[in-house]
Image (cartoon, rainbow, N blue to C red; front, side, top):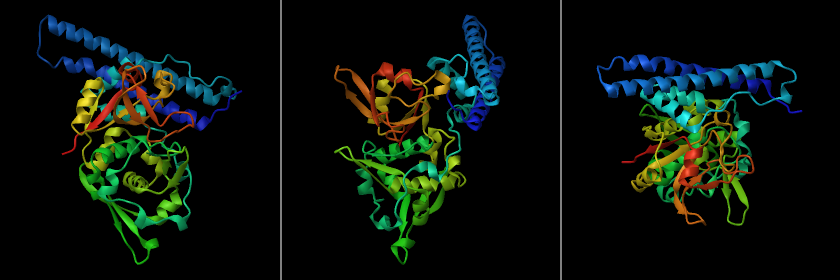
Length: 376
């Protein structure tokens, strides 16, 4: 007998229903929009046929999601639901997910679709962060926020513990710090008080390109808990408040003050909050495109679809519904080129590796999109 949280089931039911509505609306609107284009001939006929086929695929996905929503509702109502916890609907394919998102992008509804499909539950609290720091150990003036220190930042060794659902923000923050530490150091400033306990930081985030300053105090950091886990070469780790902890607390204030509000979002908004520029979203592209952008100094993160949409990630080492930092490329033991991806949560469930290496085929099978930010 397996247990189930009925509130979580109903929350998931609502998300599936909203996603179904969004995708169904796209399917209904696309054919009519193409009629506005003056175009005749065999190419137009081929184009119209492809549009109709795409719309039908979208309706199929919407129907599957709606069926899943109904099924979850039944499980929540059924006292014996725990004996059969898996929603009975056919999982879609990665190509179908990309097609749906590409259609949403063309229709100007991509932000809404991403938020509905990839947003977390929004029910996290400060207690979701993990360990708590002893106030006596907080040394605000020893937390490095200068450019020289940030240039040494390494997302491979500085990872986040536990599973608080703001990977979209942490991954984009790490990616920006890796490529543009100057920007991070400019946007976080320590203000020293009469005593160290009265110190506070001023963090600049952005709202539609407009800078907004947030004050973060030591008391808030101590109250809300430790967010940084530092892995050491000998296999041990330590937890401490860091510049990322400060940024994360500022981001909570930026989105409304509740930790749950920082969950339901996506990577483009992370870049926008941190830099004032949401960058570019790519729904396809192989290693050559990614390598070129890295060589040009782009910050890049990449996302996996939620598990309920595909039936889990194809690769057991990959976390579904998650955002990774794109670090670069390497060669595996078989001599194959692999992309190196860093998990901003480290080991979120105690089994997934903090760094993964995938061939191009494996990457495209597990990851649906990537977000790029070009720095001036």
